[in-house]
Length: 319
Image 1 (cartoon, one colour):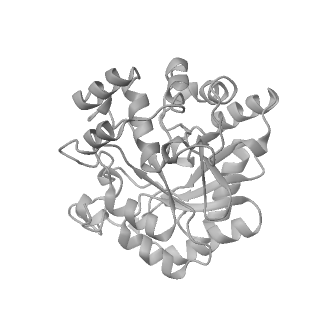
Image 2 (cartoon, rainbow, N blue to C red; image 1 turned 120 degrees about the horizontal axis):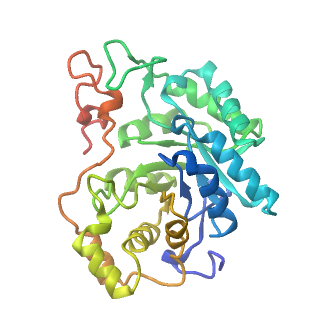
Image 3 (spheres, rainbow, N blue to C red; image 1 turned 30 degrees about the vertical axis):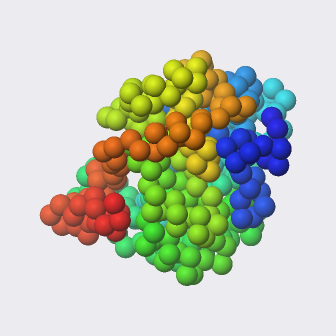
């Protein structure tokens, strides 16, 4: 692959983080990857050329991801050439649980460090919380205290970079006021059906790199079947998935498509060496009926007891 310097804005195969570390532009998502996870991870790395794998303790697949990473390294891939992201779950959003949670992740992944550790959601849940939560199961979150512990993981070399997921501008600004190590990455749902411009612009202002998840939308709103996406894909002789992934890259974000099909995993990274023309890019940007797919409502909203009684409250009314 060409270097970032040799390629135009939409043609980078990696982005440089505030820390100076690089994050590969396309990663393999592992949410709901199930029993195929180890195979998918190995295939993505050894056959398709991926160097970025995104996972999380809450996905329940970290042991499988670890097997896939180990198999890829046994096949000759160097650890230093891989970029592995994991996330701290809501029940561990207490300062004294941060390090043990990471240590469990490292053990499951069979690694001695990870490249990026993210706060999965900015809401603390009681152990064993229901979905949706019952009264008293959404607890107070000491963001500053948790972030201090995240920073200590960086200082101790267990994590190269730290960041956040599913943050609002309000919560990001709050974190920036106390952070000694600012978040390197903010991971958010982003696709032409939910451009999420407010947080995207806030991250740009702070020099925080953005990773887009659910780039193809979801089963409820599968953008691969959107007429505008299909039209651009046919014009460029690409798959709708490739067009949506490329849209994210040209926008300046890294992107983590998930698939458990070998053919699709390989297709999803064939997004270098071509561009979406500006007029077609603008058509994709103007897809109507924008809405968030992953609202967080089933995880954190209790309409009677709160503290969050609506999805809009979770997102600080920034929708």
